[in-house]
Image 1 (cartoon, rainbow, N blue to C red):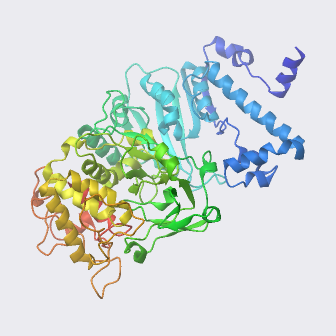
Image 2 (image 1 turned 135 degrees about the vertical axis):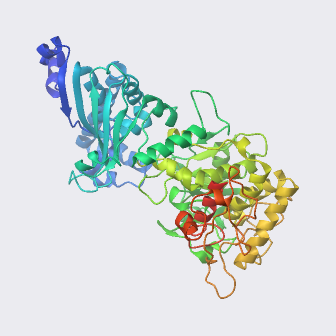
Image 3 (image 1 turned 180 degrees about the horizontal axis):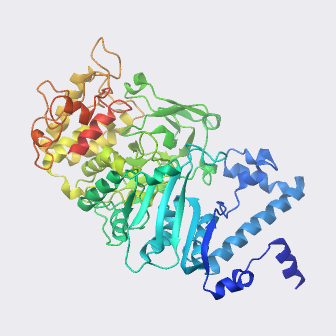
Length: 614
């Protein structure tokens, strides 16, 4: 009894029916208005030690921080006891929330208090009451909250959802990029189902009255747009909502869990966690001290090899040489470096090749497809996918593994083109509500199935994707796999694309022999890597200088990347059927891009636009 009394004083228990007996005798509150705390239940070690022991908080990774914490009992027993108590309290609270059955919809995953409070309010409100609560927008968009959001939508209890960005400092002390929402819930569903009014990306209250921003979704709309989670997409305008609905009516999602549809046989792999697996990583000075020699971007000592560990900041669309490490910092790879097919980006850490092979035991290819997990709807691009050699990757580059039996590499090139196209990026912007392109979002993006790619489409798409990705010797295995799977017409298209690249860039003369450290050839692709934007003599590296033209109306003097007439059909439409396909309309629709043949920030937009048109 004494212990219970002490705990009651230390952790002030609150029982709603005991505190408000008259309210619950009347079946609940008429109105609940609240801005609840937005905190994770799990103890955050860096935050805990930031003001108590900065050395522990500043540890380079989780493993190092753990060693410093374990050294506390003899050196600082008081801090150790405080940490132990705080950790126990967090774990006990998490266990209570999960096991009490009071919060079946929100006590999941990495629990946040705002979600638990949202579910609590639905239990406190009377049948004729309303809840008005200020929450992070993740209550409607995050996978962890899909059970709660889906329930209030399906039950007809969601009255409205208005999302704000803090760019105009509605809350001065909160980061300007933070997104929050005004969530309104009913105590009971209306007599007849009603569309749910919504606004997203508002920055001031008057935006809620802007008819261009306001739109309404029904439960069936949410089931169409996010069939797996029933979470809410985020649209800036009514037109965005309507256009997205039309696309989803025509194109299936990548994985439909409810129907058991997964035409690409897609699975995902999180290879190395940068914190939890940090004990497996080595730096360049450490490996050199162990007697390893650097060859390309891998370290070798006899039969022992350590491969680079790529991080998300090192890749971009179709480009595995976007950035490289110099010491502890990264810099963009230069045009001169990208013109050298022997150049390879250097990482911060390396991982033993045997450890990588263990994690990739089910994947027999010598190449990978990965994407940047860190993504925002407000950035220049949201969905960023790249081909990679068979290397180590951190958890911020999740891998996309396919398991289709017919021409897997050729179709992987098509999938990569689809994932990087501008329209797919437009769709992704309506799904990413936070800072991550999570698996549940990717599964629900509209992706063409593999059986849509006819031989005509393959001859148009695959050579252009190969031109973008096969720019260095370390991706020769991918080019060889494409060549082995290709029939004669596709091989002719591949060779023509290589020759066109050489003519347009002045390339093709950087040497046909691979360096000693490059992956061994197996009699596959007979040509060296394609050149990255080195123009003919007198033009600067990285530029070809041709304006972008609509692929449906190519000119005779087209650049090498322009498809020949009839090579890229678009649902049977001719150039004349496309609005704005004449004169200035070309530039108005397609834009004039800074051109380059190859990968990187200059050439990718051009190809992705064309792949979308296919």
